[in-house]
Image (cartoon, rainbow, N blue to C red; front, top):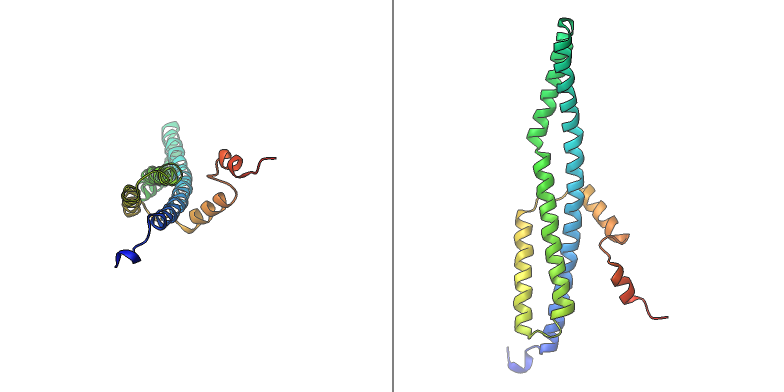
Length: 180
């Protein structure tokens, strides 16, 4: 490329700003989706774990209370064991923690991209801004490799939450509202 054809610093700065906005939006949807996934795994953990615990307690009580309740105690113990097996296999607690950690990591990228775009980009030399963008992109890409994909329901709930103002700060409303 000839030097005359090379983009100016202003053009590069606009391109970096646009890419930062894409990165910020991507991280926003990813974080919100992971938070919704966290909620779903919490429900699964409670919906399976609580009945398993209750059934185990009831079966133990039934077995100890009378010899006539042995069959019911055995049935309840088997049901509790079955639910415990499902809980162990699904590993909802671990998945809930994993989704929460991923959501927070995406939020970190989102915040860093916004701060770079709004605060630092106007004053940073273009090469430093480009390097900062590359670092944020690498952080997002690394998170994409380790985060579990979200399901359709979590994706839909995340989109609804964002569309109704989730992840919107009150200060952004005052900054965009014209003075009266």
